[in-house]
View (cartoon, rainbow, N blue to C red):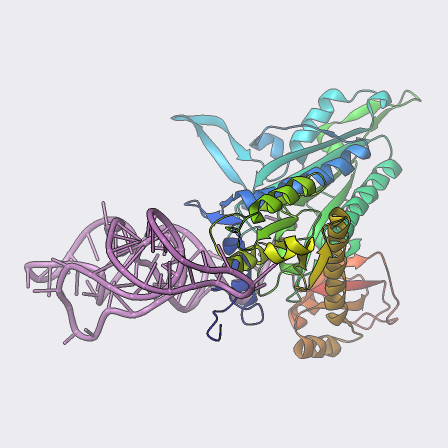
Length: 479
RNA sequence: CGGGGUGUAGCGCAGAUGGUAGCGCGCUUGCUUCGGGAGCAAGAGGCCAGGAGUUCGACUCUCCUCACUCCGACCA
C-alpha cells in the first residue's frame, strides 16, 4: 500500500493546466471522441446520456408552458438567409455551404443551418393569417453547423446539438413576456437541476444576437474564473416579421405584424457542468442529469451471497433511481476510481461484512464522505445523499463565484483585482457608450458579459470615462 | 485567422552522429486475489499522421499537406 499509485492516472491537475484538465476529463470520462472531421466530435453513450437527461427535463418545462416540438429542414437557400440584413451579416462568416447535388452544381447554394430563424419565419408567414392563429410556440431539438476556427469539445464544435425555440405573438408585451419566461426556465434549470449559479441579464447593443431587438442571457462562472454564456433568449420585435411578411388580421380587422422571440440552449451545457463541478479526480455530475445516479460496487464478489445481495439492491433501487451494478472482474479500488472519474454522485459499497450487519456504505462523490447506513429504508438514505450532493455542489459553486466576483470603480481597480485574484466576474458601472465598452476590454482584457437584472449602484460614474453611469455591467473573460 | 507545441501499438512515452522499432499501462488466456486503480505466468498488437524529395538505405534529414492541442481575435 505504501507505493500505492495515484488515484487517477493521467488527469492533469486543474490548477496546473485547466484547459488540459478539461480535455482530459472529456476523453477519460468517455464523453467524447474525436473524428476525422475537424471540430465534429462523437458524443459517446455516457456523454449523450447526459444530454438525453438535459433534453428530457427541459422538454418537460417547455411542454408545461405550452410549447410544441417541430422539425425544420437543415438547409437554407441563400436567398432566404439574406432576407434579414443584420442576421445574414452576423452569421455569414461561419456558415457551411452545399453547392452540389450529386455531381450537379445547384442553381442556388444551400447553407447548412447555423440557426433557424429564417426557416421558421418562412413557415410562420405561411401558416399565420389571423389573431386566432397566435401565438405559435414552437421548439426544435436539432443540430446546427457553424464553421468555427478553433474548436473544443462541447464548448465550441462545428456541429453542435441544441434546442431552439421560436415563437410568434400578437403583441410586443406578450413576446417580451415569453422571452423573460424562457430565460427564467433556463436559469431555474441551471440553478436547481444542475446546481450551477447564473447571472441573469441583458446583452449590450454590440453583443446582442444578429437581428434581435434585445438579447437576454444567463452567464455562469467556471471554476477557472472564466464566464460562460449558458443560454440566451431573444426578443425580435417585428423586424423579422417585416422582412419575411408575417402578418395577421387583428380583432379590429387590421393587418399587423407578429412579434417574435427565439431562445436556445446547447450541448455546451455539458461543458458548463464539467467546468463548474469537476475536480482532480474527474467529473462530478449533478444528480438530476447523471446517467448513473448510484453505482453499486460489490466487495469480494466471489464470496457466497455478495452478488446476490448486490443484484437484490439493484432491483430495489432501480424503481426510484438510475442504478448500475458493476460486477466486472476489476478490483473494488479500480471501480471506485473509475466511477469517480465518471462523476457518479453516489457509490454504494456492499461486502460480506455489510451483509452480515444488514448495512452498506454510501459515498458521496463531491466530498468522498463515507456513511454506513442500514439496508432498511435504503431508498430514503439514497434520496438524502443525492440531495446532499446537489446542495454540496451548489454551495461550492456559489463560494467560488463569490470569491471571484470583484466590484470595481476604476480601470485600475479592475486591473488590480484581476492581477491579484485571477480571472473572474467584474462588476463595474458603465455610461452606455460603446467606446467605453471597447476601451475597458482593451485595457483590462475583460469584455462585457451582460447588464445584470440585479443592479447595484456601485458608483455614479462610468468606470471608464467618468461620465454619469447608466448601468452596472458584468465584465469577464469568456469561453 | 495570427503565434507556439505535438503526431511512433488502444493510452502515455523512448528511439544519440540515417541501417528496417522498444518501454510502461491497457488488452487476451490461465491461476491466485478482492473494503481505494491487485500478483504471477504466457500471449496478441505498428504503412512510425499523409505526400513528395535527398540517400545504397529514412521513424530519423528537407519541403508540402492534414490532424490534434495551447495562447490570442471571434463566436453558443
